[in-house]
Length: 389
Image (cartoon, rainbow, N blue to C red; front, side, top):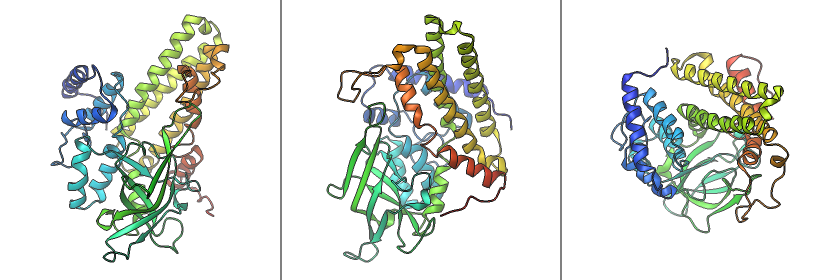
C-alpha cells in the first residue's frame, strides 16, 4: 500500500509538537522523563492491546511521534527496550497474568528493562549461548530457576529494574534447542554483578552482566520452557520498524552539521568533498523511501522477511561513511583528540570525533553485516545455508 500522512496525522503532529514544547523546558533526569512520558500517554503507541494504560495510535501516527520526538531533540529514551521490545513480545507470547503484571509499569514509565542476549562467545551467533537456568529444587520443585552465566553489550543494565534473559534450560541441548526466555529482576545483590564497558568514545553505554544463581520465577517464563528461540526471534523482528525513521532524523541533523562546517571552513570548495556530501544526502533520502515502502507493505512475502536486514546494511555503512567524512571536513584538528577522554576527564571529544569513533561499531552491533547478508541469502534469495559449527 502507499504509505503517507493524512489530515488526521497532521492534527496529531500538532498535538505532539505542542506537548513536547510544553514539557521539554527543564527536562528532568532520564527516569523522571520516562514517568513524564507515561503520564502523557506517549508510551506504548504501537501496542495492539487496550487496557494497559496506553493510548492507541495508527502506524502513521506512530511515525509522526517518532519523527517529532527526534526533531525536538528530546532526551534519549531509557524505556525503549521495555516499550518496543519486551511489550510486543509479551503481547504475542505472554500469558494474561504476565501482561497484567509487566505492561502497565512499562506504560507508566516506572519499570525499565535491559536485554540479556549476547555473550562473549555468542554475539551475532546467538544460538551458541551458554548461560544456564536450572530449576530450583530447594523450594517447591519447579517454582523458580537459578540463572548462571555472563551477558555482554547489555544496554542500560545499570539502570534497569528487569532483564529478559535467553538461557539454556536443557543441559544436553545444542544450538537453538533447549533455550528458555526468562524475566529476571535485576535487584539481586550478590547474584547479579554489572560492569560498565568503556568504549572508544570514553563513555559506557554498554555493560557486562554476570549472573551467579540469580532467581527467575517459573511464572515469568515467556512462551513456555524450551521455546525461547521462537520467542527470541519474534522479539528481534520488533527491533527495526518505526524507530528507523526517527533514527534517520538524527542522521539528517548530523549530516546537516557536517555540511554547514564544510561550507563555513571552505572544505566544500573541494569537488571531491562536495560529491561525497551530495552522495550522503542522496543515500539518506533513499533509506527513508525504503523505510516508508517497508512500513507500507502488507508484511508478507519473502521481501518482507529480509527488509530489516536490508535496512541495517544500508544505515550501518552509511553512518560509518558519515563519520569518516566528518573528520575529513573537520580538518587536521578533528584527527587529534585529547589525551584522556574518559567520563571522569574534563576533556571531551568534539562532535565529529565522537561520531567517527562511535560509528565504528555500526556494522557490528544489532547484528553484524555478515549475519545480515546471510539472512538475506538464506531467507530471501533461497541460497544454500551457511555451514554451521
